[in-house]
Image (cartoon, rainbow, N blue to C red; front, side):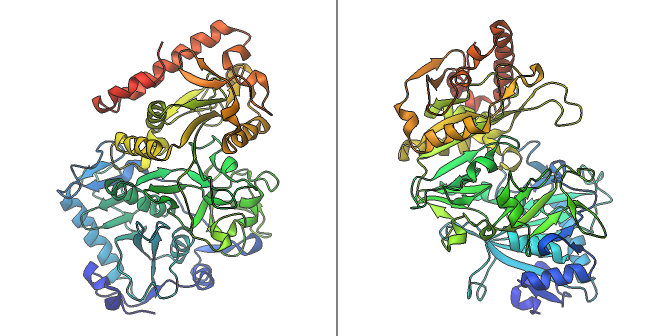
Length: 537
């Protein structure tokens, strides 16, 4: 155990905290979590936890303190809700009191980093009362090397007090008893009322999304991979269900990271030291990397298992469809990190936007101009499929700015302008790949574009052979599409030609374009100059 004063916890008001465990080994954290009845031992030595009522993020309970340091930069609204400083102070004092009055129970501290590039990394401190939450932090953030803890000073601290609720939330102007509040001036975030581990991970991502763009570094919600020789890196943007993880996990290209990255003047770098993968309907054959990563050191959340055999039923979503596993990045054999290299690479030659268009309107593959890249980046489009979520009876367009709307702290245009700067400087090419339907909408019984066709398109993009194709301008959408592409079925390249009823296609195209236009209006007059790069009726 470590003295709290040595760590500077007394500066936070934690004057009575005595039993402090800092950067324990995974083995010790697992032992504690089992001893304290927080977790169960599961398949191949992985541990399983139940996060209670909250099995996912609680975006309506996320707030930022309105103060002079950050108020003129923050993109205020439903993503970044305002909270008064006095409310933060009251809840902060309650949390500190909770820690000071915790008798002789352990307080767990994880010190590490967000960002693989030492030039831009954030020194992160996570303070928690649950051993499994410290285990989660150990998996997800970059673990310090020997000696890096000696003079460690956190740039940002998250204090997790999931047992503390705000019972006066209505008086405080909050949404519920649960709260996730960031004070960017004090460099502290407090969490109360939710055990979900992802709040810590995405909390630091939100902080990096604030700090890095102000330094000229593009913060991105994307996966990334690279050639074995460390060249020709690529970025994959896409919302849930578009194939981002599947397509960036390539046996011929080591993984840099699967979720969060930065793009600086020096190249790209992973923010994390681990992966946080969905495991609902996990199939050993279809996703062997994730399946094989479930072993000693991995941490499963909210999976359903047999109490006697501890066998997991990955198809059971009765607790949540958002079942997850966290594990260190080196658990993926074909990753840069597993080969004892930092999760970094040079400037990407290729940027790929993925969409799963359930309307069957978008081309399977198209090449974007820089202005079009900005437009579709801000739009962040995909479409949910009927039947995948309760209440959805037809394809439903989803727009998430910069493919990471819930985590943006600045206006989307700030990220889009940084993207333009990087693309122009490094001559990176941008492609839009549709992994959705062709020849009709999802409701029409049409087929989804096959994974074989999609992989052939990704290969053509990454090896540059797509540039040998002849391109034609696709009307209305204004996109450049290849007339032919090796290994790709001809009938998936031009979506209108694939429909038997072209009048129905044109009608649905008009509907989708109107949805794009209405969505773009929500970002204000600042983005109006990009409308010319979008679809036009």
